[in-house]
Picture 1 (cartoon, rainbow, N blue to C red):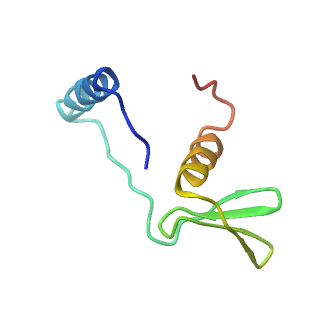
Picture 2: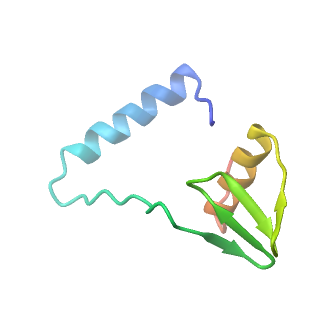
Length: 79
């Protein structure tokens, strides 16, 4: 789970309010079976599992959240 501070949460709510008022905004959700792949790894977001080959990689909740955030935002600078 990713935690937001009060200021972050307010900014997120503002962005969502703006997007909801846009009739041309199309909300997309990942389907249950979606897989994120990077060389050598498969990430199953709906199951919160990561595999290398057929072997499951065990991560804490915080480790998984951070890893998923970085993979999902490849090529972007995160602060």
